[in-house]
Image 1 (cartoon, helix red, strand yellow):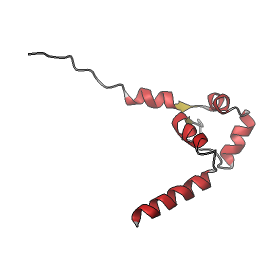
Image 2 (cartoon, one colour; image 1 turned 90 degrees about the horizontal axis):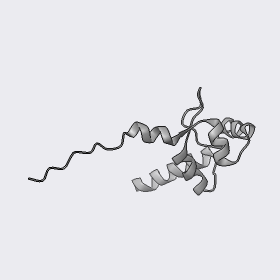
Image 3 (spheres, one colour; image 1 turned 120 degrees about the vertical axis):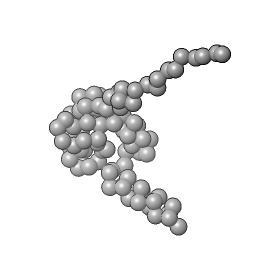
Image 4 (tube, helix red, strand yellow; image 1 turned 90 degrees about the vertical axis):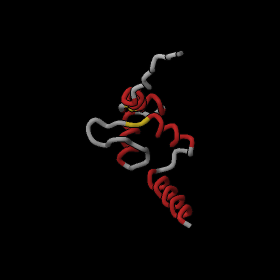
Length: 89
């Protein structure tokens, strides 16, 4: 009987940890100054994971946001609403 050792999948917490970014890393990732980043957060122009302390961002969400042309959060919510509404028909 060929028995293979069971390999545990990569821990999801580790993947999420790599996905989470703090303001210093996010400003470098996006090419913004820290002031611009905070302004965009306060205007809801950029997706955030948590807006409290600590302020955190998702690398995956930011990549998707940039691929869509950096829309505002309101535009993204409206798009999600319209997509959901169209799926119900």
